[in-house]
Length: 102
Image (cartoon, rainbow, N blue to C red; front, side, top):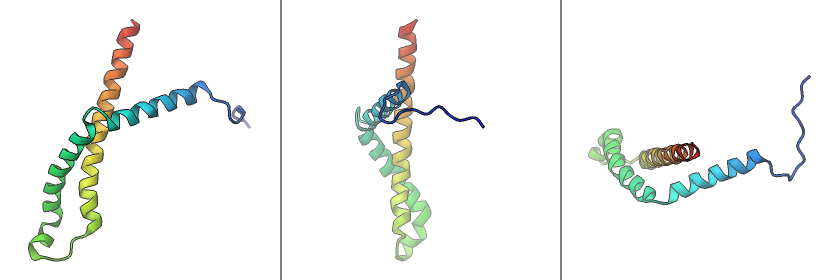
């Protein structure tokens, strides 16, 4: 049986430092540079359109809205827009780092 090497607890490894730095950068990109505002605008526009498509009959007849659908209809476009902006920034920052190393 092959066992993974046992690491002492509480010891910070290079891998854990890299992961913490990466998550810190991701969080910073999520909350800076106009990303929240742009994502909110996208979520409002796309969410309204999707809500009219998904629950249009309910809105017309005056029936009770499905609140979970309503929330998800706005939350998913927000998450997708934020993911797109953060992944773009991560890619461009890593490309800039590789060019500087040459």
